[in-house]
Length: 280
Image (cartoon, rainbow, N blue to C red; front, side):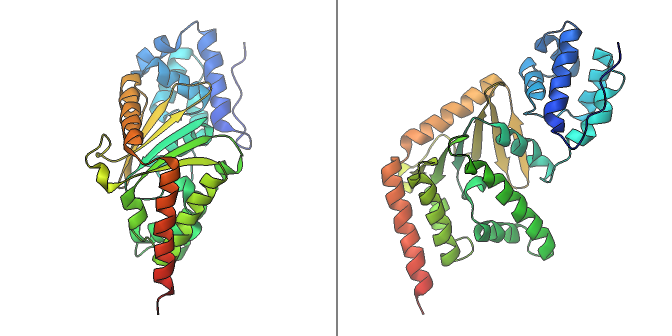
């Protein structure tokens, strides 16, 4: 029987490669758990690769070709499927985000990327890279705004964001930029496109003081948690670890203001920013 053909990069390489992996695994008579053993990954990780929510890494591709007898097919094609405009530490998370059915996020410092305006994103990237050429900043901003186009769909993904009060109080880009950014968030909420809550300073200690977390669920793959720090990120697929992060998020959400009260607070801060910008 002839082997699979090389993928056409003009289509959807990640989805096609995942479909080929599932076909090859079934043909070999292996379960996802059984295929995961020689790769030292979980069966859920295999399921995420098959669903296209996780990339097939080069070292995994070589082992898959060996175990599944696929004549270097995955080795040849994983380079195409792994091309990304995002930094390496965030590429998998961005690709998973695009396939997610629900996204739940706790943001301790910044407005989440999917909710950022162009001036806000530009100010963030310029702060990260103060000496970068403008063309580099332009590319980063464009990639971030492209991600936000996920919200052009009226219903999917469901996005539920909990913003720490610090997110509102730090005037990224100055008062005018911040006022516009906060109004964008409240506009999305009032149009019933997102759910947003604010975790006030008065909540005190909480379950996600360790940092930002993004939880993603999918219609045909196990859930993922993405933990992000400065210039680094970790995509977590272990069911027990994902469950712990889900509990932490639920506890934070329970400590946050109601959506109605949250919108009132965001409106108030945005109004203060706007007035400050008008001062001579």
